[in-house]
Every structure is written in structure tokens, then in C-alpha cells.
Image (cartoon, rainbow, N blue to C red; front, side, top):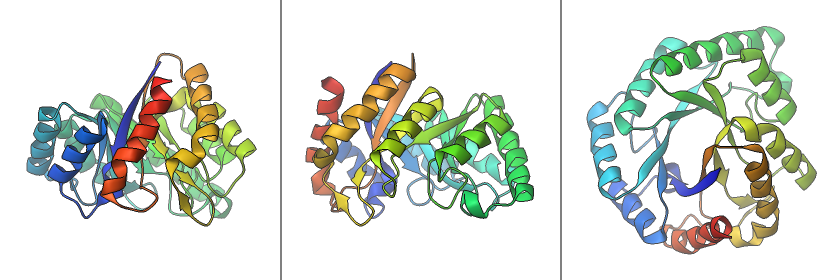
Length: 253
């Protein structure tokens, strides 16, 4: 398997597409997840085509389309513009959120509806040659690995995959277990080093991230996985270079 260093564009919402691409080039990053909230609005295919062309011209790849489609908030019919935008971007992966409330607050009836909707959008993605990924995120069904893995197993669809990231509110043992369980179905990782109360420079998380990446090397088999930086600890574009250098060092070693 192989890792590819990249960036999530929402890390820098106030910067232009051109500025983000130039900074990724300078920092030695190869993949970009373009977000639907600012840089590539869903359904605006002209913008998607323009961003795709600029990304390719810079020698970069579109790792994914980071949508703000939420199961339970949007219907499967509303997913069509996201598929079209992803296709025009050249992205194989569409990231979505798994619900509108945490797993402990989701009723069985609500969960059944989310399962049906997830299966429906996975069918749509598969027909388009794409995959859908659920982000491990608070206030969704993937806020804990037990709920998240159970949801994947219930949907039981090859086009429903995962985005993994550590949970800053839980301990190392939890995150190591979660990484092992998610690794076989993971397309990309959101990379950051946060505690429950603050964001920290990525280098301070080097030792635990080495453990995470070793799990993915062992369990992800032949996958190509994007390691996508999400938010600098200080929200400064100028910090991207040193943060990317840290990330690239992990991959190279």
C-alpha cells in the first residue's frame, strides 16, 4: 500500500483556489480534497471543471470531494449534484456525514432510515464509478467506532467506505482500536494533532501518528490512502510548509 500527502481545502476557506494550489506545490503535497462549501459548490460544474484543470496543471490530484451532504438532513435525490461535481473534478471519492445527531441520541427508527439512505447514495455512487465515505465525526453515527462499524455492516455496500481521523476526546487505546477496525475500508485520513482543548503542531503528535500509520500499512493491504492535513494548529497558510514537511517525513521513513 502507499500513502499520499495532501490537504483538505476547508483548512483555508478564506484563501483562493490558486493560493491553495500554489501552497500545496511549495509544500510538496500531492493530493487535495476540494470542499463543496466554498471552493467547489455542488452542482456548479463550470467551477468544478476550472478547479480540476488548475489542479491537474499543477501536477496535483483531487483526492476527494469533501461534501457537506448529511444523511438525515438531505435526501438521496439531493445527492445527484455532488456526484456530478465529483465527476467533473476527477474525484473518485465523495465524503459525507453520517447523520445529524450522535449515535447515543439516534433512535432505531432513525438509524434504519439512515441505513436505507446510505445504501441509496452508495448505489448512485457505484453507478457513477465512485465511492462514498463517511467521516468519523462527532454528532453523527460515526462518533464512536462501535456505532460506525455497526452502521457499515448494516448498510453492507462495497461503495460505502470510510474517512478515518483520531478522536481528540478519547484516549490513545480507543484511537488505536478504531484505526485497526476502520483500516480495511478507509480511503483517506484527516491528519491533525489535537487534544480535547487545543490544537497542537503536528510534530508533537509524531509518535502516536507513527503507530496509527503502522496499523494502516498492515491492515489496508493494497490501498492507496490519502493523508490529508486538516487545519493547521494556528490556521495560518504560512504554517502549511513546515506541517507538510513533518507529514512527508513520516511517509518517507
